[in-house]
Structures are given as structure tokens and as C-alpha cells.
Image (cartoon, rainbow, N blue to C red; front, side):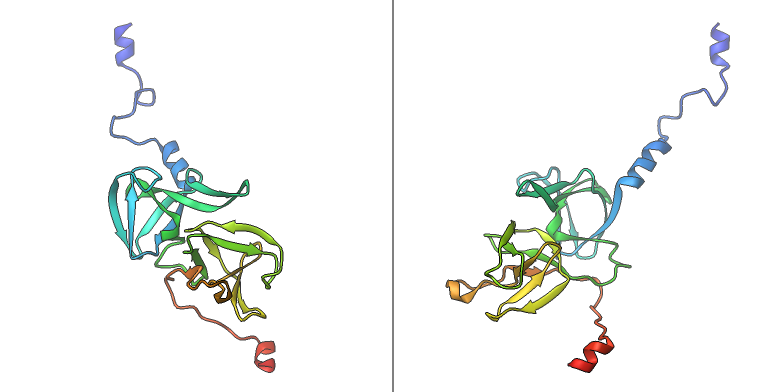
Length: 203
């Protein structure tokens, strides 16, 4: 009986202690997505909160692999509206603020309009270009969002069109306040705009 146990085939023997399960690697590959740092300095923390210990600090352009499924999303009005904290898998394991990063690899990513909310009171998203249009929800400070269009409304305010509506780029001076509501995140490549024949003919 003892001889039979010692003479097991190599297929039946336990893998070496330093070996890694291919199934586990494949799970990480599926979950991991390419991101990169857009802030000058991005602290990586042990846990998804600003009070946990900083284990590393990355600089602008550092490539990251992120587990988006395990990352913490921002909830507004009972609905998830983008990421608040990202779970970093590589080059080290930890957590960082989503507002300090952008999707894609820094070396190969094309230009995109990514803004971050910097106003302490957040950013009001409305249905239309004008401030009289209905309020949909409010993006919290540090929320990152995609912008598809920038226009000036009847009051002379620069407005940004998002997936769900419009928000102001700056505070309304008529309210007695001044300052930015949202700022353009640094981009990895210069933005290139192409004018269509229609735009050229009607400018």
C-alpha cells in the first residue's frame, strides 16, 4: 500500500509549492483592466479610504492594472455613477482614488475629454443647456466623467455635455461665487480636432 502511494504518476502528484494556478491567473487576466495615473502624484493605500496607510506613490503616466469588479463605485440617487476607489492589482496591490487615474494605457491611449469635479458642493447635472432645465442629479467632488460637447448658454456660462445631461464648467458669478466646478484631466496625447465639410462651410 505504501509503495503504491509513493509510485503515483506525476499527473496525480501535488504541484510544487512555488507554482501558480493557471486558473487563478486567468481569472486575474479577465478582471484586470488597463488604467494610468493622470495626477502628478498618486498615493496607493492599503484600504479604500484616505485614512489608511500609504504603501507607495506613483507619478504621472504610471501604468496600472485594475480589478474593476472589486473597485468601489460612487452611488448617487441609488444609482452607480462611476468609480470612487480603484483596486490596484499591478504593479503593486492597493487602492487609489479614481479621480487621479484614467482608463487605458498611457503609452498607447488616444486623446479623450475626461473631467473631474473639483467643487466641494459637487456638480449639478441638468437635462438641458440652460440653468432653468430640470435637475437630474449631482456629481460628487472627485467624480470623473466623460465630456462629449462644450457649449456656452444664454447666460454666457460654459456648459459640458455628459452621458446624462449638462453641467457648468465654472460657478455662476451671479450667485456671488467664483471658481471652477470641473477641470479637464491631463491627457496622454494632444487633442486633435477635425473640421467636417459642414463646419468649414458654415463657420
